[in-house]
Length: 112
Length: 128
Image 1 (cartoon, each protein chain N blue to C red):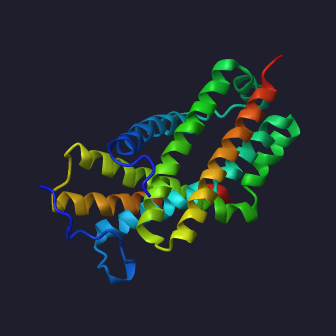
Image 2: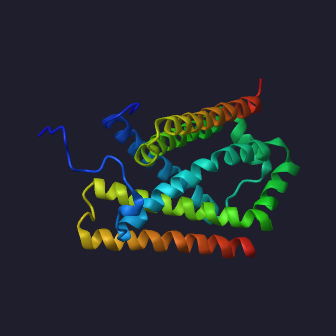
Image 3: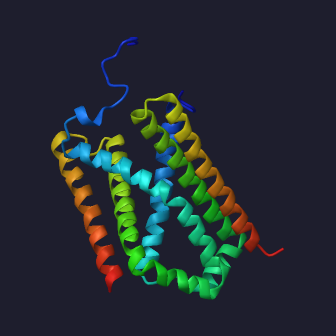
């Protein structure tokens, strides 16, 4: 039942956690210094290849972290196999669909 | 050591467990994680909205501070703060820092209080 069980997800969970803590610290510094971007600089960031990549890679880190965490929680508490599978599929669909949607949004920003 | 029948619980029954402060942080870590996952579609939708036009960008920032969004906003700030605080505590313990019982209890209380203070600050900030 355990997909990707063992040390690999354990390590991935911690590496993505460190990455996301660093990203969150940057966001907190930006907020506390009052450096929140206006529309044009936010748009320019998302439009640039680097900005779009940073946003998407961060979201992939969130999805990886969320999947491993949600899977651990569901395997601990949801015992009936059909309900467990349904919830696991629902969460993986939510993560995949939002990641694809984000990729499409960012792709639409890039200058052709 | 390899035994087929171990004593540790494979499945946890929350109703049969006692809940010391460390357990409260731990369950909060799980609950806040699930809340944050539930917020992901809104996060992506918000990003899409924020990039659509200048007016949409401004409308989104105003809506985030509007009355109906305020409760959700404060709840999500609590979830994020608790998840990160409990996560940092977890990572430090992995590294062997603060895993003795008195320090572990102190850091558990600290994580709970930190998250509640963040939620309070968010509530006050969204009112002003």
